[in-house]
Length: 123
Image (tube, rainbow, N blue to C red; front, side, top):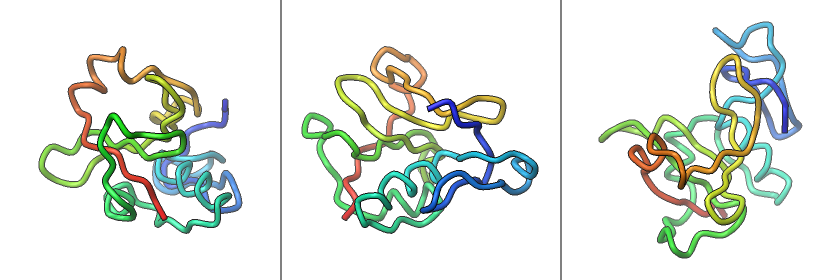
């Protein structure tokens, strides 16, 4: 929590210096955060939201558990954002440049509800 967002940042070992817009900032982007979290459980994920969407089992929304990946955005293409489900309506995510890793109530957010794409359980 509180770690800076860094485009392209994050690895299985923790926050890293990002690339492009993230060059010069140590932190996580959304998929870097999720790959770091799942690496602690011994599961390797790629560092790309679209690929993570295909790495694991699709889970019905009502069956989600802590740690499951929540995907958002992208229309008919790959999702553009991934977060870790925590409990109830809470997720932990690295939102965007200029922000930090934090909790958000995605169920109370009209934006996140409108761009929700699915739940995936890696492994």
